[in-house]
Length: 80
Image (tube, rainbow, N blue to C red; front, side, top):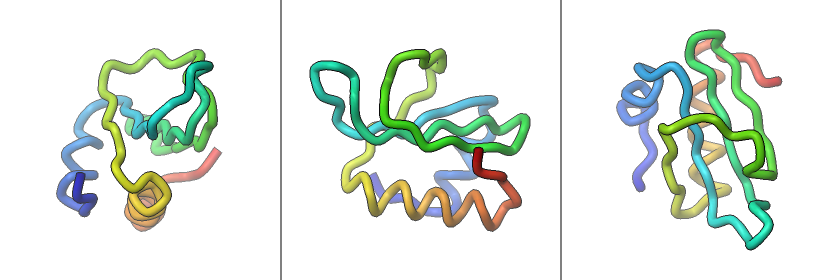
C-alpha cells in the first residue's frame, strides 16, 4: 500500500476507518483508528472493541502509520 495525501483524503470521506498491522493470535498489533467526523485519531495496540468496516492492512506498518499521522496532523486532526 502506497500512502499519500490522496489515499488518506479518500479514506477521510468515510466517517471512520482503521489502518491495521498484522495481528497476533490475541488481536495485538499496531492499529491507527481515525474518526473523520470529530477530526481525531487514536493509536492503539489491540483489536478488541473495533466497530469499523473500513479497514486497511498496512505493509510497512511503522512507516505507513507515521505518514498517515503526518498527513492527519497537517489537516488539523487531534491525537487522543
